[in-house]
Image (cartoon, rainbow, N blue to C red; front, side, top):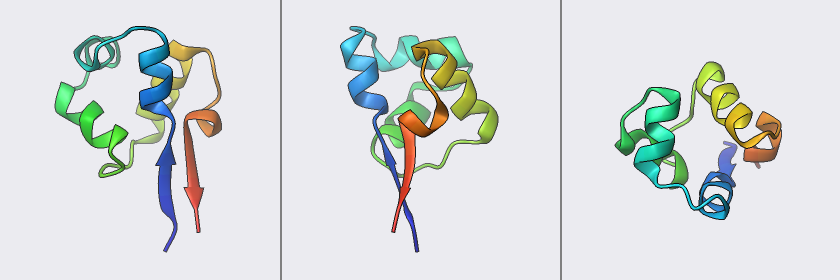
Amino acid sequence: MPTLKTNLKEYRESRNMKQSELAELVGVRRETIVHLENGRYNPSLKLAMDIAKIFGVTVETLFEFID
């Protein structure tokens, strides 16, 4: 089964952004961002697109499925 790999933490930290700040920008709880960064939560397409838009990258840049 494919595993979701994310570069979210690297992008967030490169902007000196706290998890809570990102969560507020996309309308989720901080815990959701924690779970995303730890690979324990697969985002909805809308959430993935909203996060990608904040960082000015594609969804595929932030999230990738690994076999």
